[in-house]
Image 1 (cartoon, rainbow, N blue to C red):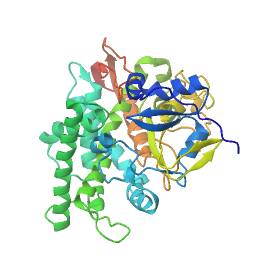
Image 2 (cartoon, rainbow, N blue to C red; image 1 turned 135 degrees about the vertical axis):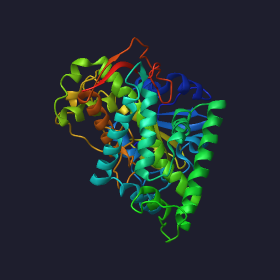
Image 3 (cartoon, rainbow, N blue to C red; image 1 turned 90 degrees about the horizontal axis):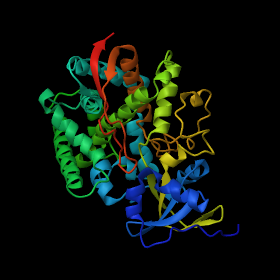
Image 4 (tube, rainbow, N blue to C red; image 1 turned 45 degrees about the vertical axis):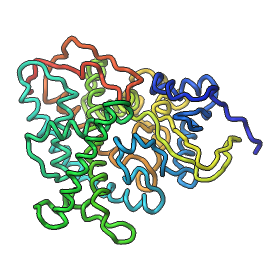
Length: 414
């Protein structure tokens, strides 16, 4: 195949442009160059950016790309933790991923949905008078639910501290300055706490359900039959807790969609209706911006040369708004998911690829169940009114949250 010159972003570095343009950085350049693949420089490093379905299929080819050492150090130290499943490859990744996928059974998903419903009822009863910010309420509800579901021992008075620590890990993951260092400190504190719990579980000094994720992770063995070190167990348990709490970002957008598209809310009569509404929320609003990987070995694709070790970013948000995949992608249309032919590469709000052998988020099914339970609760079991507020959000925030956090009042149970 004849080699094709890959379009290149002019200039020494474009990190500041990325921070300024946010979720639109890759798509802006893809449109400018009229190419789904281009080269730029971020944090002083040559970086290839891609967007689109065929590009996603390439990106998740485990023979061509590796996740090891792909995420920036500052992201590892805040969002993912060091030594976690996201940075593994090959058999080691597959074995560790199985530990997570074993929790995504129908019974375990029903369990967290039941817990979540109880927690939403408790939380909203405590706000029966006055206004409530639903983003903050969601973080508390999800923190309690995550701790209960994983079997992590906790006291009610510790919930605000747990919620703040877990929230900082995703709210400040890409920040600079004090917020970044605070996120790192909170991760350190949480990892220390869970490492201590792991030690007590192994020593039999704490009573914990042996079917709970916390116990299962504490007793998990690697490919060599060895127990994971306590620090790694802590990272992986946080890789359960943190993503569950991060669903608060989607809940913020879920309530925003209910505010902005009341005519669509009126159509929510069946489980299928709710499923389509939730899928459109996940497609339409920004969540993960990009997924990182590194080229395993030199190869050529569509005439473009990919050199070993090159950092490569797949635009998740851009792919979910690709007009080659989606009709009128900038419109909120839940009905587009009626009869939708989904592949592992054309709808990737939380990453793409296969669940079992690839790097697709193990918690995607849980995200769906959490959002379904939340949507059903707010539509069918609660009445409320939206207050006058600023519901805008910025596309250069990671993650973007509505400025008011969605405020409601006049709460009553149906």
